[in-house]
Image (cartoon, rainbow, N blue to C red; front, side, top):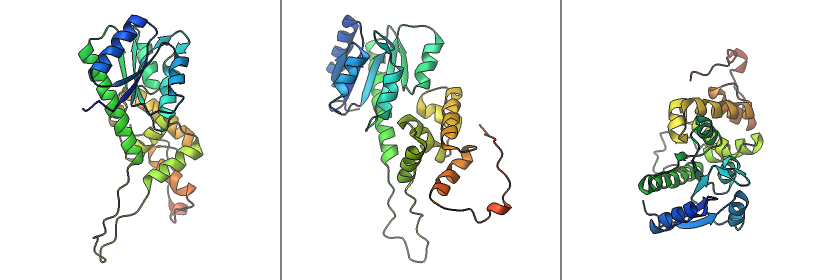
Length: 244
């Protein structure tokens, strides 16, 4: 992966380690914005410069990385994070996954593995940006005798859903994947978390949007657009099942 143009936010309170990380990332071709606290990291972001990935120490003098992970996902454009910690408990890893971190790294970590994690986090950021902004145009060469593909603007629909339901960017990503019909296993792969954590995120999005289950999410969008089901009076009531 070409890394020259990619900007990294590094937040680590232990100065020798921060300097080591910064040197390693810089030598690999990244531009590094380094800070010792959450507040200092936020100040570096205040000029709204684009950041492609963040490497965050979990425990910092003014809090944990969880809040900043969410803030970076809620930015325009979003940014995914790798959380680094010396803790050995599984709860810290679970909390990192729940708040939307792409990766979780335990100290000490070798430079090659850390760089691989960083490259993966940058790639994940770029993948999600493309996903949220993708648009598939209708082919101009479609024969008149064949119905053209449906021009459903999924991006606009998801943006509307995010606004109405007050979804964070991370929850918007989950809603997008639900509309694509992803299983919890596929969702876990894309979000870099366990299936149990993926199911937690799915349940949170369904609760926020008012969808009874995965299959009802599209109905929520259609009803918001004023589309009524002509068979609604004959339809069987939904069951609150989730096949996953």
